[in-house]
Structure formats: structure tokens, C-alpha cells
Image 1: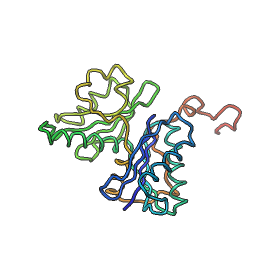
Image 2: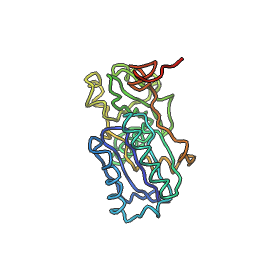
Image 3: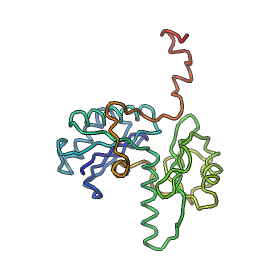
Image 4: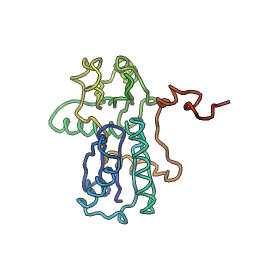
Length: 239
């Protein structure tokens, strides 16, 4: 199956086209650019892969958690492409996709003799407001629910879930929060989820079509909800 994978949970969006277990093309998109440029990037990737939208069998989206604006743009873009192509839309966890990328790094390390047997992978990305989004995975399966945490709480939380197993980390949070510096030697290279990981996780999952029902996974309230719990000033207040 030919699947377009898209993730916009971080400042560096991941885009890819896969055909089963083969990667046809992948790329990155700077989320700080104009939002409309994301579609241009997707179109360019399709051209590079030699795949027309009509040839897609499905579209897969990383549903978060992550940047609120990025997730909304990614979900809307993925829905638009899937709707226009008359294809299903599948959604997966962005943190699980990052964990998938990190697991691939560990697998590559094992080929050259490094021992990472039984390692737990913690995907940790910047959540702004002095917090991180985090999820722990072993063998691709989640260990507990994804959380929003203070950076200084990450190590204790992951070690509790790992229950003595070695822990490896991945994500962009290390570059943002000095409190994570003691974990540097355990940090793997993937900083943001790839589109390929999103597509492959979706293919391996239940393949539930969320074209009409899909929504981003925010985990925590938006800044607007925190600042204006009774509604935006000037709008009707909740009773």
C-alpha cells in the first residue's frame, strides 16, 4: 500500500511516502514557514516519489501531542488531501512515531555490536511553557499514558516505568531544557517524528478511518483555555 505520512507536532515537520515497507521519499519541512508551504512540500515530495495523489491508498497523520497550531494545520492538511483523493485518513501518536524512529537507531546500533537489549525508549518533545510531552515505549508498545511533565521530572518518571530496564531518550526537548542535560549520554539522534514512522505505524495499526472524526491529541488545555477559562473576552461567557 502506498501511504503518505505526515507529522507536524514539532517545529520540523516530517513528510514521507512509503509503499509497504519501502520508503519511496521522505523530507522535512520548517514549520516556521508559511502554513501554505506545507502543501507545496507535500506536492514536491509526491513528485520526487513519482506518486500522484490518485495513487495513494491512504494518508496517515501524527495526531500529537505537540504544537497546538502545528497539530491543527497538520490534521487539516491531511484531511484535505485524503478528502480530495477519496482515501482513508489514519492517525497515530506523534510520540509513538518518534519512538519508532529511535528504535530504528537502536536496531542499527545493534548491527554494529552495541547492546541495547530490552531498552525502553522515552520520546520527549518541547511542550512550551516550561514543560515537555513524554511517552515511554518498549518494543513499540506504550508503557503507561503519554504525559505532560516538568523537564526535571522526566528521569524519575521514565525510570519508574522502565522498572530497571535501560532507558534511551529521543526528541527535541534536550536542546531546550538544561534540566535534561544529565541524560545527554542516553539521548538518541531523532529530534522529531518522521513521516515514514507515522506511515509505518499506521500500516501496522488498526487502520481506522478518521477522516470525519479525527482530532489532534493535545493532552493539556490550550493557552487560551488557561488564560480565559470563562471564554475569550467579548464572547458569551459560560453559564
